[in-house]
Image (cartoon, rainbow, N blue to C red):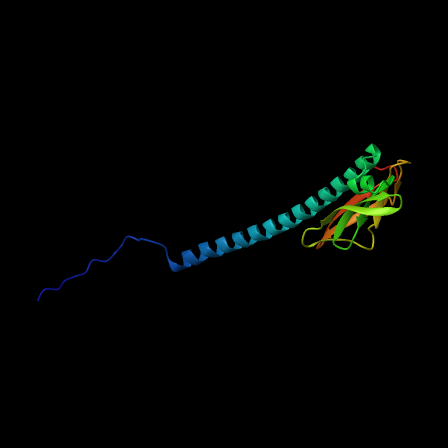
Length: 161
């Protein structure tokens, strides 16, 4: 009888199980770090955008007061314009026109999800007077997103930073 030998494979084709486990472990660690960084960046951008929107509303109130532009409710009610006010609420802020002692809401802007006002340090309202040109309610407004904070300062001279 003839003895048939099967040829042995000496060349190595493919990867071992250990090599595959190491590669997938490294990929999992990198993916976890990437997702965590993206979430942190996203939270920072949400907070920054909320602060930018609030600053734009404050600047709009200031500009309207300086230009003495009367909103439609004041014109139709034949009332004199006294001031524009930005009112800080729990999870939103509101731009109001004060005409002869009556308050008319122009816009209400909600804060993005997760962003809140720090009620212990934030002022409740900033008013820009049409007649005197001065402001009432200068101070700081603190926006909070988890542990992140953004501070907006309104000076007595009307500078918004």
